[in-house]
Length: 173
Ligand SMILES: [Ca+2]
Ligand SMILES: [Ca+2]
Image (cartoon, rainbow, N blue to C red; front, top):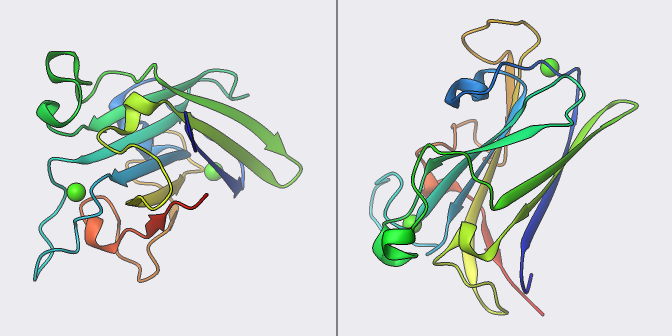
């Protein structure tokens, strides 16, 4: 965790794709969320995402998964990251890389987040942050909603705007 934050997830089922767009979540896709300040539980009631949270969408651009687009939906306040050079919401994220491969019974995403792609989080032992994963499964081209979803939330609530439910990760040596 010293220079890059890596994550992997395995999925089962066939893969459908939609051409590159911010609507890629409607297809077979992966979404990853970070609460870098681990502060979403600091309120008496859910307050949604705040100024230090990230939201990423990982979308296949071809059936084989040779080309994967990483889409940035939400970014922290630029004052907390790189100021005028801060990442903007909605452009593709070229500082997050993804390797995709199919397996006999599904597929695997491997992601590497560059240090700047999770600022102001600075991964080191003792640091904690919130992180959620949402897997969308669609088997029909043109569907407006995924057929099914799998989430790191355990109570059936969609994680998108509920960082108070995202699992907390404590980094260790
Ligand atoms: Ca599918
Ligand atoms: Ca937060």
